[in-house]
Image (tube, rainbow, N blue to C red; front, side, top):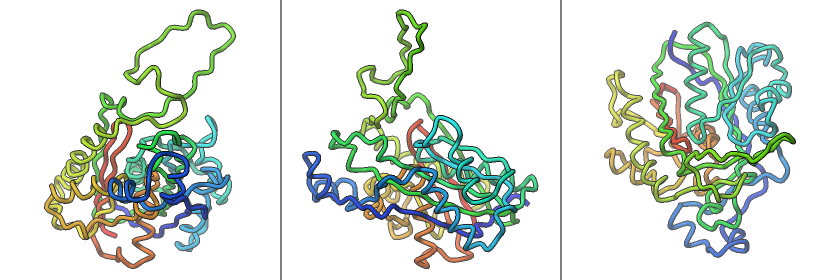
Length: 329
């Protein structure tokens, strides 16, 4: 069996919400400016909840809805760029919290494409005989947001979602990509930790701005927009290759929730009505790899995505990564 079934979904959004008016008290902006340029009205931000905690809450909900014993989970794959530790992975902590001890657990850092990357990896485990796979995407972007940058701080939010998977004979096709030459357009540099034996440290040019602040997201909005509007339709086209399907055959697209303008532009270029793209960016903002599965869980619980429908997940982000997956729900 080479396909996958999504048995259940789950999500967690921190109760704390931050409106555009709230942000206007921090930086020179206003509600209308943010809404017309991004489509965002409000977003959730943690009030102390760690990344692993949000992921564990989402995972527990998915497991409960699936009605399985956590001990039956054969692999846990988490996508995040905002882990709580350098080591261990948040997947290890989530494994502890849900009581699925013993199975392999690891993290994937592919930015906003992370959920699709993790889904693709889970499919490989399932096709090799793993009974159940748990994919968790959890992001605390507020921890790496520069709240003095009016162009970027308006975009990001926090949240987590999870999917419980098993192997099936149904449709599954995916495509993953990365263009590292564009890494300088969106990044968050780690602060270096010099050891006591360092003398006259060398500087190795990595393409990023040497004067850029550490530990916060830096982006070239124009270049990211240009990349994303092309990456979304290209990823969909490549994921559909060999399936006999066209974008017109997709019942519902669930894209990364980066900017409503990106989604509108991509939909127009593909000739697909915007109504076939599920969006919740107005309520959640950009939650990086968690944005697709959060929207997925919402689409399921609201009855928008129904069993038997063909769905396409498509992500794009720092790296520059892009990825898409098509499956029968």
